[in-house]
Length: 388
Image (tube, helix red, strand yellow):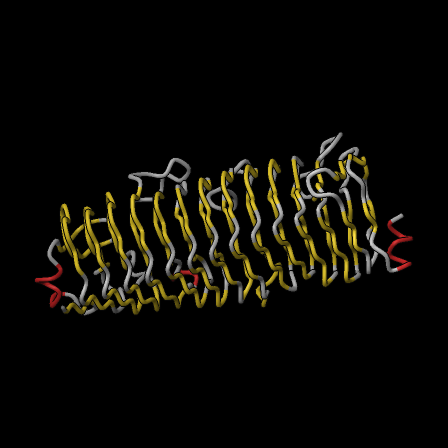
């Protein structure tokens, strides 16, 4: 029926009810249309339900794809798309599989108003994509990840992830950040992450690893187990702006100068209610915002941090950081700056610090406070400039 519909240029209309299937090959030009909430394709004996390979113009709408009999390997998906473009998934559900809901390789896919739940690995995994658009989706109860946009080598990937609700992401695969992320961008350039709501991610709401020219704007990140928004390793050109972080062991981290991670703007964010420790990564000390290289930290509001509200550098890993126009309230240390030999330039200007428990602005040698009043004694350190 699938082949005949595509060959005749007609949509294939599925009735209500469940069909048990495995390994359907969906040809180009196919429109597969179900009855929303009652047309279901259930997996059989552990194989992918359907595959799209080397084609274009396939639309699937109003169909539930659900794991069925037999275990499915973690690296397999309920739907797998390879080397294809102009693929559209609308108002579908991907439910209860041992692996991933949607796997897309070298493909361009639109995923709109879909539900992903009860998946053993991830909701969506894209590798070497030509650009995904993921909008208005509901993602919950996934074993290792919500949405992963990965590449085998660094390259452009014009993906947009917008206005999704992602919650309850576990880290069954273990590790120290490879799993447990709501949205994970790895080696991909030009990705936009905006307007999403992420809650109860075991590690991170949005994690950028070796990403280029990435925008993370206007998201809500609640109750992250480690760092809420992370830009790490060989990243370059991260804009992290106008997000809300409420509940995390670390708010926003812009790090890894040792791996040439540099160049970011962190502005207009609200970061508050930082936890005293991380249950999943005991190496994390509490902080609100942290940065190392070529970064402007400006216009943020940071509140209730049992540690460093804003921190620049760790040991010699500090270069060209501006901390200006921020409001900090209720923290052990308002602003902490590395002042060891070899630390690069940092400028601190026009911040408002209120109800600071220990030190409003302090100089640190690694984790030790060596200058408790950097406002008064900035002249002792050639890398520090303070005004306002």
